[in-house]
Image (cartoon, rainbow, N blue to C red; front, side, top):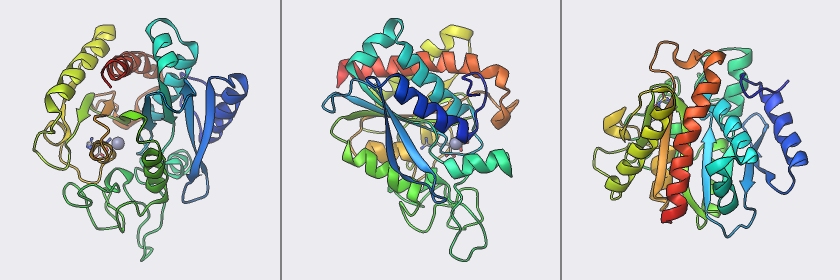
Length: 301
Ligand code: 0X9
Ligand code: ZN
């Protein structure tokens, strides 16, 4: 059975999306944005105000297969939106949330069946020597320049070209076609306990650095207020390490000013193997940070 406090298989997650749309037809829509390399449907859940003219926030989880807490958070957050308690109620009324619970589905399935530590997608390279492209190096922004590799066997392989991967292409196309309404882009990874914002492909500060830094500070304070979990925040390049072709920089380059990447729990003790016993607390505290960002976006865009 699907559970918000457990890690769910891809099959369970699909079943969950279909149940939600049936149970809450006026609140939740399921959009098929295309297939993965291995043919699995990529579903974006649209939650909230269905008016396509309203301001929207796009969120994705599970770009990297082994970061299981990330899809768990997206599922949790959808539940919170549906419950619509307290401050979330206003957000659901006034915003549209587009939530992709698992970006790299084939990789996610692979971590359940073959290799728990798999990171990339599952597309074969041209010479068939190695499998997989790092989807967070495959976006069309300074592609394959820094913090990336053009070697197919590398864990940070940038792919044969920008948007060479069908998963990248599907997400990028969806965002491009909704770019007028999408005011914020938020991506969820693990681990390190960081809240990052552009740039990642250069050490230069983003034009909106001051504002993004203020928002991150506020969001991290909210998160920390619940269980005292400490987060660092700042521009990606200097806070974690530089990477080119990443989704947040690409979204920012499209004019989506409020672009963030979370690196969720923990700081490295369990790393990608975060125990299920930490799902609830991680998701609760992260919900506070995301709600803070969403409220800011609602008031300032
Ligand atoms: O390397 C990555 O893609 C991210 N770290 S992870 O351990 N989850 O793989 C860091 C991404 C930092 N860069 C951007 N936020 N653009
Ligand atoms: Zn990651």
